[in-house]
Length: 107
Image (cartoon, rainbow, N blue to C red):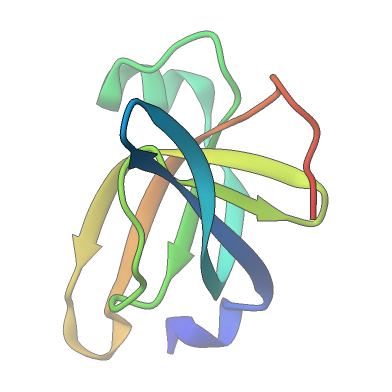
C-alpha cells in the first residue's frame, strides 16, 4: 500500500482571520511523502512557474487546504493544488506544492 511511504511528519499552518488582521495558526500534523516534481511537467500541468515544485502524498482524510503552509525537515511548502486519488487500496491525496523560500522554517 502507498501508506508505507508516508514517513515524513508535516506540520500544517493555516491563515486565520480575526477582525481586520490575520495570523497563521497551527492545524496539526500528518505523515506523508514528498518528492520533487519536474519543472516542465508542473508548468505544463498547472502553469506554475519560477518556483521549485513538489508533490506530497498523504492520507485521503488529511485536513489540508489550498494555501496551507506545510513544514517538514526544515523546509516549508505552500499547497497550490489538491488532487484526490481514490483508487482501491491506494487512496491518497496528492498535494501540488511550491517550496516557500521567503522565510525560514520555524517550529
